[in-house]
Length: 137
Image 1 (spheres, helix red, strand yellow):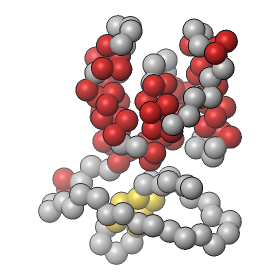
Image 2: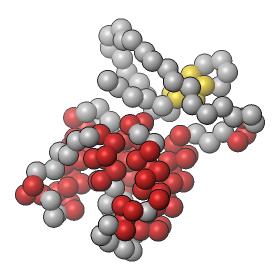
Image 3: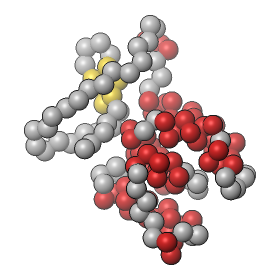
């Protein structure tokens, strides 16, 4: 299954990421919150960026379970699968302990036990997983 995020402007769906579909597929569209004023519409990517940067600012200088107990970390998890490519992109850009969110969203853990204490190896395992599953190039 492929999850993508789009904004419906009243006429068409505007995808927030490039979507390549090579074979006919069944599609399910779920409409989320309705906004009264289009200017109030925050794109999914903008919302993610805002929440991520709040989380990062609040947790960059701390370690341990506080990173995962931060309310913004849970908000990232609550964004679900459409957030996966955005999370992986952040992982490519800056050091961040966002792995637990990836585990919770995907239900997977591509990190071998022998890598469990090495940030660089964990990061590389998740980026490899992202490439293998078509979330990043």
